[in-house]
Image (tube, rainbow, N blue to C red; front, side):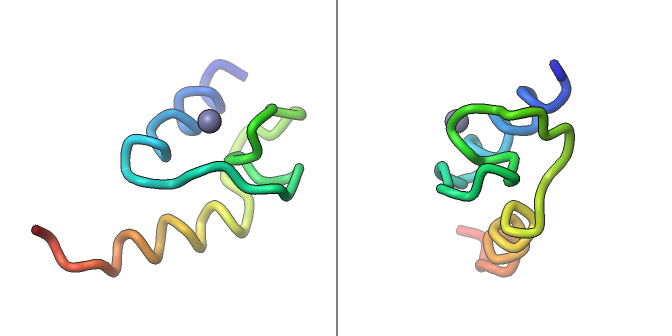
Length: 53
Ligand SMILES: [Zn+2]
């Protein structure tokens, strides 16, 4: 569970916000997720496709 919190916070650092989908890691309150959900991965993929500044 601690690892999920760290992943959540790292996702914030790289630019992800909270989502309304309870099964995503980026939901505001962790309901037992231990890894990124499909929406989390989609968000990270989009961030990764942005040009570096
Ligand atoms: Zn958060």
